[in-house]
Length: 77
Ligand SMILES: [Cu+2]
Image: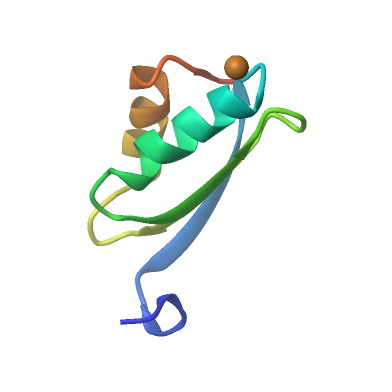
């Protein structure tokens, strides 16, 4: 199933504190991509932005925020 045809696809963009280099953002991206319901994620230490494409049938914003916190980062907004 492609992302474009997934009716429950949602995207979320958050500001996240705690990424200091490409290694940090890569680690967060990898942690998010491993979670059930996450279709793709991108994280940038330069902009401190994280965007997550997810299946809202499996995941919600509160849980994504938890996953980021569990990975050792702080969600600012
Ligand atoms: Cu780093």
